[in-house]
Amino acid sequence: MDLQSIAVDLVVLCFVATAFLHIPQKVNLTRIVMVSVLSTATISALILLLNELLNLNLDPVGAWNVRSVAAIAFGFVLLIALNYSIKYRMTMQGILHAFVAVISLATVLLLESSVVFFALLVALTALSFAALWESSFIRQSLLWVFLSGILMVAVLQMFNVLVEEKRPDVWESTLAASFDDGLMFGLGYSALSTPNIDCEEVEVIRMGILCTFQHPHNLFVSVIYQLGLVGFLVLFALYLVALGGLFERRSEQRWLLGGALFYSAAIFMFDGSLIVANMDFVWLIFWLPIFLIMREEFMADSDHQE
Image (cartoon, rainbow, N blue to C red; front, side):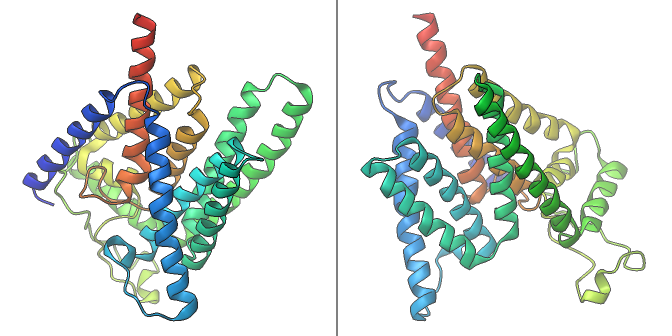
């Protein structure tokens, strides 16, 4: 990625953020955007499932060519659909969202992404702890404690499995290059994460894997490599401020947008290379929730001033 494309992406980010902030307050933008995402994703999921079941041999379009990217997107949609199916339970809206959730789950199962299931577990665990924190009844609290404990054990078990699969030697090699050449400000956003691995010390050669790689499949490690500790701290602060604002104000959208951010953080532990890139899954699972949270904060501040 060259500097010109990075500049264009940053301009688009600023434009979208500004547009989101200036949409009239009476417009339920979060609902409109999420329903649009659910609608388009449902059509895509049905096409993908029918293609697989009926052997239509249709070629996926765009990023859907990469099964892991498609699985990440449909996992995000599954999280949204589950939220709305619970929120509107026992209504026609709830039934429709439950249908979308089932279709999304079937698609994720078809694409066989363990990272997506890990991210969904992380999001559900985090929301379970949040519910426990807000609960004021003993019976509810005990239920959330029990559920949170089970989910936490499942997350830790799955994390250990994924760390073994995702070649931590790649992360170590990238971080070593960062510490040696540009820890504070990184090696540049356009730098490719291609430090060499010492094949004599790791077992990747036995698996027939090349000893160089395009990126470490960990967005947080990539951010440290490209933007240094400064960039990583900015990203961490963005997560912290967004989540803190949602749950401190007890926003109506805290379960939906908070779950989306926890989901994206878990995905970034095992995938992603550029925090600002040409339209890809990072925009869907990270920047979209961030923009919607920014608008929530902006609207809340406007109400307070009035």
